[in-house]
Amino acid sequence: MAVLAKTSSWALLDQFQYINKQYLRVEECLMVDGLSENTFSRYEIKNDLFAIYTPFVMESQAKAIIQRGSDSQKVRKRKRKLDHEEQPCEKKIFIKSVLLDIQKTGKDLQVFKPDHNALEKFQNNHTARSASMIPGFKDMFQKMCEEKKDMCVFPDNLNNSHIKKIAGPKETHSAHSFIGILGYTSFRDCATKVKVGGQICLIPDNVSFLTSDYHDLVYGGFKRLGESYDLILMDPPWQNKAVRRKKGYSMFDENELLKLPLPSLLKPGGLVCIWVTNKTHLLEYVKHTIFPEWGLHLEAQWVWLKMTRVGEPVNDIDSAHKHCYEFLIIGRRNEKTMDSTGISQNHQSNTPRTSDTNYLGQLQNTETSAEEYHEMNIIKTSVVEQLADTSRSKEELAIDEDSPQPVDNIPANFVLASIPCSIHSKKPDILEVIRPYIKKNPRCLELFARNLNSGWTSWGNEPLLHQHVDFFDKVSK
Ligand SMILES: C[S@@+](CC[C@H](N)C(=O)[O-])C[C@H]1O[C@@H](n2cnc3c(N)ncnc32)[C@H](O)[C@@H]1O
Image (tube, rainbow, N blue to C red; front, side, top):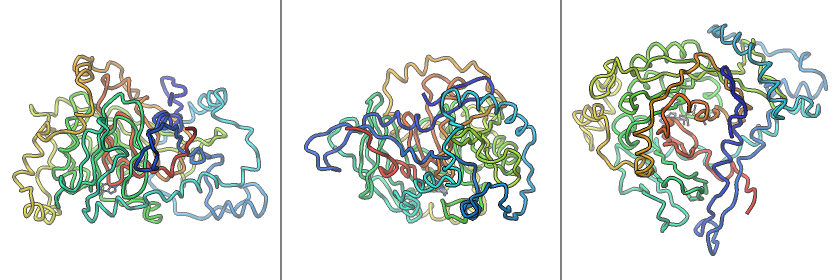
């Protein structure tokens, strides 16, 4: 179980466990390892990635602490311009109101170990930070998307009947380049090792993914994502100084998001969850611009509270510089604003903006004309063969159709507490906590994904990034 404890106002999550249960049986393969027959092994994501023991301090501060052998209190704080976008105060009050309860439960469950070896104190989470430097694929996928190059995914055993479809160069064309779609039937009950660009990665059971640039998605590529979804989760590449400094991943203007034909991807009653950093203007933008545009009714604003293994928030809750929390904004499809085709009446993205002219120009010279583009935006269900659909059995679909609509109301305030992964911007998995508020056997889509999860369709310019075998340890044969 990834949800270790849950009350009406908070949940304690274990991301390490959630990930690992997808790799209990990994089919090793002939092509990758030259094995004479297929065998099965268990893998775990590297435990060190979650070795977060101390509150965050800058590298320079940590060195000073080690040199002085003294307490962090004595270290002079680096002067930094305050973020004048004050955080909503009531959220801090809410976090404080549940913190003791979370800490006590975490201690009882031995998730938090307050008496952890004092020696670790000055290590500044060195182990976790080193683990997060794993090269893996680096920016290979981002570059390929930019250059619109195609790539095949080679499964370990091409004869395996569970592989529904492998998209390769034949199925791509210059305007809508996509790197690969790979599908597995449900209930196969094992993950598989595959080769991508000469590198090895692990693919969980029952996933599908699409790798492309955002423009390809917006201008028609979304049709490849299949029929509409009950849950759409996204963590957009918001403009962010830290990311720019580290050159972590590419970013884009938040107004670009409005072009996404999200209403056509969302089922009636469906939920959309958007991760938002601590910038007040972004929170406002999501709630007051994006949600109305996409025909979503704002249901809740949850908080993800990042905790150390010792059971403390990773930063002071009141710190104006570094925050120990991020937000998850949750909205439900508002049927009142949908027209008969299920398109939000507010959604304007099928009218190209001035900045789109160049891109549209390119498209007109290739396979997608402006008329087709317009048509794509009003198509509710896709006409192309959908991988995401083929990955699910008829029986499963039948259960879906009969299943009742969700009954539980989403709590407006809720804290998701977890020990964060040291990979920059890696978010915890939320499905188990959201499940009571969506229909049974939900179809789930993650946008801007950097990894795959069983039961999900994942899209982004690097959804295989954290599937690289380097992020895992083989636990047993
Ligand atoms: C904030 S990260 C997502 C992190 C993810 N939720 C996780 O837990 O690992 C945003 C992602 O969007 C991707 N991205 C940035 N610009 C993009 C674009 N133009 N098209 C597609 N993906 C893009 C980045 O490369 C990055 O993988």
